[in-house]
Image (cartoon, rainbow, N blue to C red):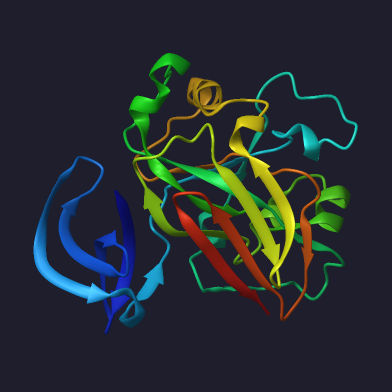
Length: 249
């Protein structure tokens, strides 16, 4: 099932997506306690918002062999935080900072947590996942290499696009991910190539950090990410989920 967050004439709501139609719901999608309102809309008449508003977002570094560029694989998952203020949705703009010399788009599968998770063994990790969405871990490479931490390289305003929707019924271990810049394919991989699986990642993170419903984990990127500049159109496509599109300014 696909869920999304939308805005129409100043009202925000959650909806279930069926092809090009959205049916409004009221209630809590994470506890499965919601009701259909009977309101049905065409997607074309709605603004698509980020599908969730997480309390925290983490992202994995070096989780695909093709992205290591000769470096040794990490001996454990290597998550870092991305700030909530960097979150944007489908069709929102990515702001390229004037004083960064190289900004890349990273196409990634994003895990959306469905239940409060602490000390979760990998064997039970999928019980705590609500669904999956597309993500773009926008990265200022010069700051990433030059700063002592990645706070602005990974979390400048608009550096965390996610969306357009959350898909709950999908096999995350065999999904094709395609990254495009101006229609040209710059990244292509399958989630089966992850060094650290989603269950192992959740086990590691929740040993130290409690995750809450709606929290997001960016699961890493492949190959060499595509450099982006003002005017570029970035698209992240994942089988069964859809395409996340953002214009750079």
